[in-house]
Image 1: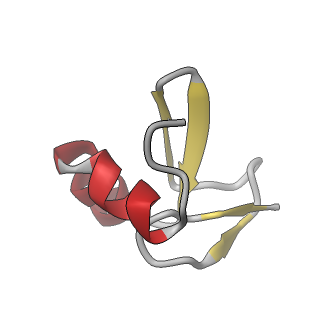
Image 2: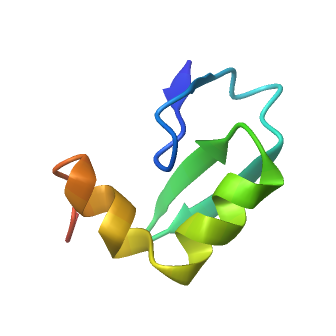
Amino acid sequence: MAKDPVCNMTVDEKKAAATWTYKGKTYYFCAVGCKVAFEKDPEKYLAKQGQAGK
């Protein structure tokens, strides 16, 4: 299971509504809207998780 970096919802990688690869890592999203928000400012969401710059 993965965690949606926008809303922190747990997401089954096989059933994710959307995915996006950023800096070599694939992120899984519960909804397309979360993916769109992440695409606009990924560092904002990664900073919240302590992953910015990784």
